Length: 278
Image (cartoon, rainbow, N blue to C red; front, side):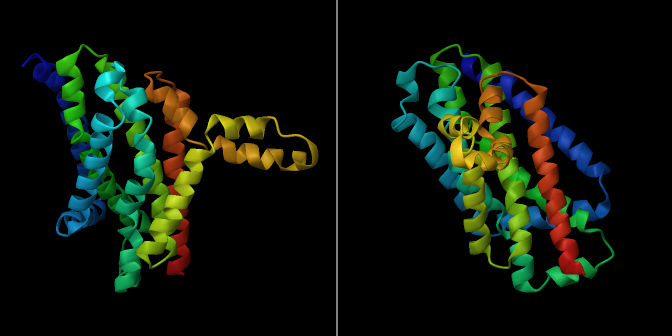
C-alpha cells in the first residue's frame, strides 16, 4: 500500500499535471491542428497498430528487464543500468514504427494532395500528426509503471532520478519520431519510411558511443581532413545527452539539444511538404 502511495505521489500526479498542461496547450492551438490531431490519434486506435506496438514495447522492455537483465538482482534503485540504458535501443524500432504512417499513408491513399490544397498551413498537419504520435509514445512509457511499482515495493529508490530517466527516454523517442516524420514525408511506402528511419535513428544513437567518440576526437593521419565533418555528426549523437539526463543530472544544454533537434526535423518536414505542394 505504501508503494502504491509513493507511486501515486511521485509519478501519477506528475503525469496528470503534464496531461492537463498538454490538453490546455492543445486548446490554444488553431482549430485545424486540433482536428488533425483528433483524426490522427483516432486512426491509431481504430487499427491494430497502436495495440501491437504497446504490447511489443511493454513485453520487450519490462520482460527483458525482469527476466533477462536481472533488475531485481542488480540492487540498483535508479534503474539506469538494468532498464533506462536499454530503452533507446528498443525505441530505435518502436518510434519509427509509430511514425512511419504519418505522411506515407496520406501519399499512398492519395489524400496528401487534397490535404495540401486545403486552406491550411502545412504546419497544421505537421503539429497535429506529430502530437498524436507523441501521445502514443507517452502512453507506452506511462504503462511501464509495473517496474516502478516493483522497485518501490521492494526498496526505497530515488524516484526523482527514475522520473528523470523517463523524461530522458521520452525526449529520445520524440527525436526518433521527428526523424521519422521527415522520412515519411519523402516516401509513400511505410516500409521504406520504417527501414530508413530505423537506420538513421540507430546511427544517431551509435555515434554517441564512447569508442566512436574517442575515434572521432583522436583521428589523425590521412583522414584528418574529415575530422570537422565527423565532429559535426558526433555533435548530433544523442547518447551523451540522454545519459546525463537519465542519471538525474539536469542540464539545460541537454534539454535545449533535444528540443532543437525536434524543431529542426519538423522544419525539414515542412520543407519537404512545401516542395511536394509546389
